[in-house]
Length: 616
Image (cartoon, rainbow, N blue to C red; front, side, top):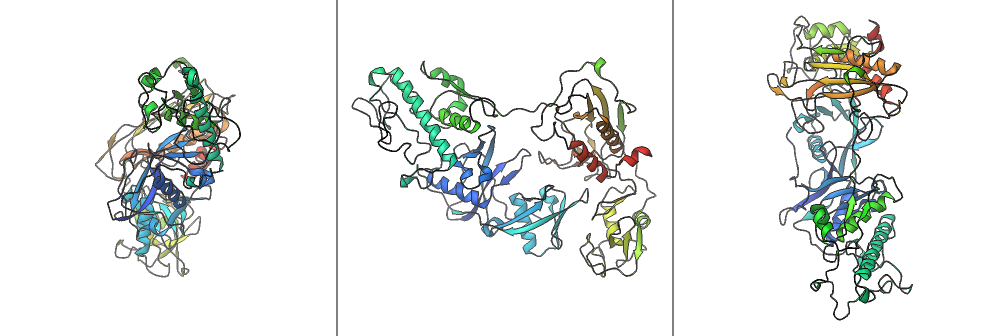
């Protein structure tokens, strides 16, 4: 099904506006680590739009509308989201959709994740699902959007076409996203409501105001040092980034530079005002830089060289939470001091430690209790003797009087004919025949089971789409490659008493076979060889043995669409998670992770690879 109601994509770093006199729904989105644009909630989008109308070059404190987003600030000028406690920055964009689409009606579609909480779909997927729902389609195939999922509206479920795994989905009503028409007027006041003269009392704004006060005090101090004769009369420029209420109540003393607290500083005769330029040779540091985009980011070295002697180069290096400076204060101080023209050293978010220290060949040893150090797979040869009817009949028992309930494959009642009647025809299988799987007892139309088998790997095995019970030996579509495994003399975080098992997967590019999505077409293999790590203990060695079985059955990788890059016809992981970070766990793919070994054993079991396999 073609995508409906998708908005025009806007490049990050610029504010997009819809055509004049055309009403559009505005959805703000941020770019996650997998390269997918994730929508903010409608309430957050309304908040951003309100701030944007007041000051298109200002900043948006997301914690003011959603406490779960307290660490995040959006800089509208650079179109980036900044996380104050880690220093992480992500692009954001302002996207437009039709007012009659899901966001315009306040409709949100969500799927149930592994933590039993609900995750909203990407906005283009949400719109596509809602369009199909409104047209009363019984199901929807999301492959046109790059996802191998089927949506069934009668059971409100999502099914993975490769693994047959099902998840619940739901449709709920929420606040409609903001509506806009044409260009949005700009002004210089922010936050909204600053004209009242009363500063906001939330923690974020208090932090911003205190940081602004510190920045102004530093500037005033440096001006007194540079111009001792006029320290009491030189104007102290207040930062206009967060214009609004006064910093201090009136009548409580004097501020730095001799300006009364709560009063607006005035320039004496001979000095220069806010809109005037400084006399030659008397340029004050940072005076004309407050509203320049990226002064320090674009030319850090030259900017540092241009700062007069005595101006402090304050390193804000505590964004990861270490050291005496609070991470949020360090982050906001860095932003405001960059805007003020002061040199600031911002550190990036910590990088993952992907690989161990270098290991010599003499230190690499075989894994105890595991035979060999390498496994290779070749092209699969399909067994022609296993026709679909024979496979299905092997695992089912015929049901003479089926119950009046849904067949979860075609979503038709079991007492009626299969939904594949007229679409699929097999000799000896009538569309009204119903069978019960031997081990789990779930019932389906026989014709539906044949259709499901034809859509899979055709390896002689069958997997129940309801409970995932596997009948026979399940194999995958992993392309040819090599798996190596050995012991290295280093320890993983959380397993200091054990050495480490290193697994190296290597798959070259090639041509897709008949079991792949596009037979005869070239597939890519990005990021190989891939290094993965296990602790060298009893459970770690058990996982390795089962991974070897899964490799031999071609279950570790498959060919599909990358969730990270969106590239199709490429080698991707096949729902058996691996740890690819050696010395950290910044991405969730490293150590320490006390539950990982148990989780991966459960994932292997779901693929039909169990400890019983090792005994055979």
